Length: 337
Image: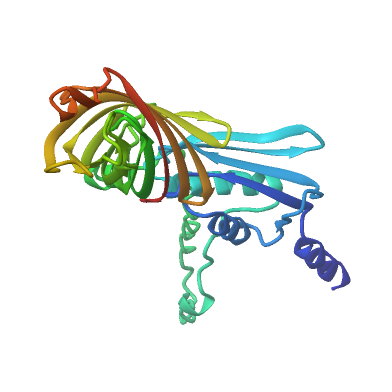
């Protein structure tokens, strides 16, 4: 009896403390869900958020959510490394959680549901002296299936929907080609990205309104021209380049809309609206602030295609549209999966 109690006490003891480092896209289970899976497989595992934990468990899921890896590190030496691929991120995390449990607690086993003794029929009483054949042994209960590294994929429609990431952001920008001075603008942008193997193409549609400071008319005291714009843009980015905690993207941009010039302090001042169209390239640096919340800093180079120069009088130019312009933008947004 004493030996039995001692054995049960040893089993109940927790393993060495573990510090979890979990990196995964937003479509995957959270760190709390992963911890729950680990403790469900082995209650002996103790997660410690401090840096002084005896071991470190690193779990990393790729951006497509279909590939992942894990390793346990103690005193600088890694062990139990495992890489898996599956049809969904939930399945990847399940496999890695099981592999991590065995690495952290080799005594852990996959849970097996034992048959209820009350459901087992009692053998009938012997009523004859004639020898009877021994009953055939019942087959052992089937073990609980362990997650496979190559589970069956979902239907193509479900898999495609999990690979798409939507985003919405508020943006502010400063640019030069629309007016002789810097034009400040603000607007909204919405985008969708897809995880297609090694590529993560992104499409972003945005709309904004901007206005410049009044531009003085040469030779006309107190006369100014104000420039405003109402534009829509489309950006296409073939993939992203992860650099530490940042994402880098290079994109192509098309923008079009209307540009309005309004004279002030001139004899017979007029307001004229003309089309605007430009092509360009952009570069973006994105940092994730918290889970799916991100900040995006972008720079752009634009080539105006519609180049309407602005005159206050036939001989008084206010703006000759440059062949090349530039600008920058800052956005704050959130991703949805």
